Structures are given as structure tokens and as C-alpha cells.
Image (cartoon, rainbow, N blue to C red; front, side, top):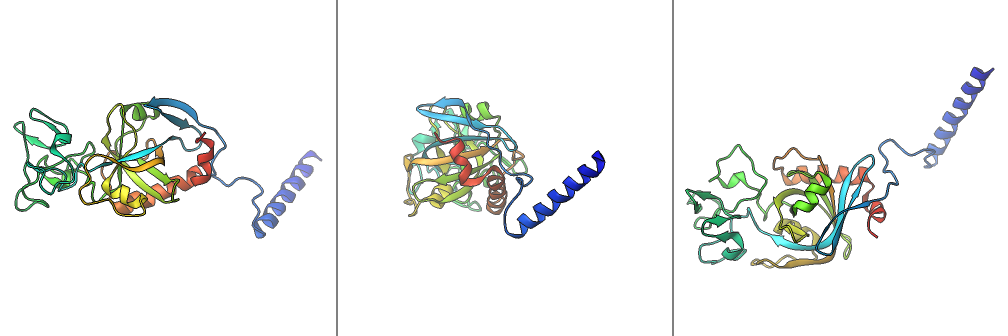
Amino acid sequence: MFELGSWLLQTCLARLARACAAIGIALVAPVGAPTTASCLPAATVGDVTVWKREGHLAAVVFRAGMTIDVDGAPRAYHPDDRGALNRLSHAGRPGHWWALATKDGKPVVQGPADPAPGYYLSMTSLQNPAFAVTDPRRYVDASAIPYVALPEAVTRAGGVRLGDLVALVNQTNGKVAYAIHADQGPRNRIGEGSLYLANQLRNTPVPDSVGIRKSLPDRIVYVVFPGSGDRRPKTRDHIAAAGAKLFERWGGTAALNTCMR
């Protein structure tokens, strides 16, 4: 009798589920649907709280502005700043160049066959080891690829690695973009993205010569997905497609309410 009752119950539930599906109602949450788990504070950078949400798809979330990062772009730096996207003083100093590729301790100057002859070769933390350190293709081009630079506090708190994917939401204009974690940011500053990424999130293009300044207001939400990359640079198309799938699985903009307090 018990087995018959169990069979009848399962049959009724199956029929009810089919009937609900026919009119667009989900009887139970679909496989992979976001959980209602809330975020917990994981770190603080300046006055910005970094949250971490566990669950079916973990994420590190914070809201900040966006300073433009031009590292890796062919015209990022020039010996006399002429026509450069940023001032050379922001790339380091003799003996300690943190944004320039060097050979024998001296910055590498791009040659006639490179994208920007006469400009210094700028590097990013994320690199393609298939190319030499003097080859521009080794680095992630800030003018062509959407990427973010994250401080150590974020990567340490969430187990984030170079190459992981990020979804970004501009809460001012509603624009959504996807990026790859490609550069290491300063320890005391949070909210930094490539020139290409900034243009995706803005209503108007960034001026051709940007320098280091805040491009976007403090209403950009960063959703970083730990372990989503393989520590290798990716194409724009790959970043957009893979990032969108992750963000949808996580719950999209609706899920931000579980973190943004």
C-alpha cells in the first residue's frame, strides 16, 4: 500500500509539473538556479567593503568607481610622453619599472614591426607565455580587451587568480560588461579597469589621452568569479560569452541585492 501511495504521489507531482510548465510556472527551482545565500564581508580596501557569496557559484562582489588602466596598450607609454595614453611616471622609474617590459634592466622600445614603433612596451600581470617578453602579443592590450586590475586583498579573500572572469554593472546607466582579471592593482586602491572596458560601461568614449584618473563614478558593481579562468589571456568574444553565462547562472542583476547593502 505504501509503495502504491508513493507511486501515485510521484505521478501526480509529475503531471502537476508538466501542467505548470505549460503555462510558464516553475514548480521547483531549475537545476543551476541561484541560491538565496547572502554575502558576507571578506575584506576592506579603503572605504570599500568586499563581499563574498558562497553557494552553487561563488563570487566576490564590491562596488566602487573605475580608474582607467592602460597597461598593455601599444601607446600606453612613450619616452617623452608624446602621444601616450599615460604619463611615464606612472610606469615606474629607472631600476624599478612595474608597467614596462625590460631587457637587461632597460625598458623595451617597440620596433618598426610592432604596433606602436618608438613607444615603450607595456606589460600586464596576465601574460601569454607562448610569446617572448619583448613581443607585444604576450600582454593584454588595454585598448582592445576588457580587463580589471584587482588588489591583493580581493584576490586573497576570494581565492581569485589571474585569468578569472568578471561581470560588471554600471548602476548609473544600467550597462553590463564582462572582463578578465589581467592586472595587479595597488594594495590601497580598488576599482580599476582597462580603457576598452571603461568605454563599454560609459555613455561617451574616454578621451584619447587619459592619464590616471577616475573614469566612472562609485556605482560600478564588480562580480568576480574565482576559478573561472585558466591563467591565460582570452579573446573579447570568449570573455563576453563565458562571462555572460556565469553571470546568468549566478543570478544576474537580481542577485546583486543579496550583496549590495
